[in-house]
Length: 116
Image (cartoon, rainbow, N blue to C red):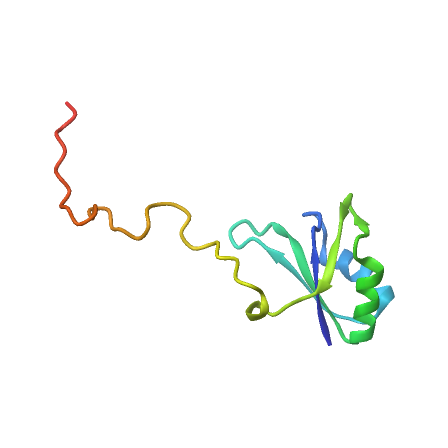
């Protein structure tokens, strides 16, 4: 059993299309299309689980770099989340480095004058 990552998919790609693409190279156990939680729209990548590791390697060799819907596919062996290197990104995107709204370098915030 080998899990393959399939990236750069057209957002219109269906599970059936992916299964049809991989089927000539070996038995496809499962296809998992990754979708956005809020919109339900495809996020442009999927995971294909193949029963035979040798067939999965052949599928990678045959399909990586091929075109689907005008996009060049990226196909490789899927890595478990814990094996991926941490890039340091993510987390907080906005705001200052962990200070609360009223905490400005240890000084109490002064009340503002009304604007009117």
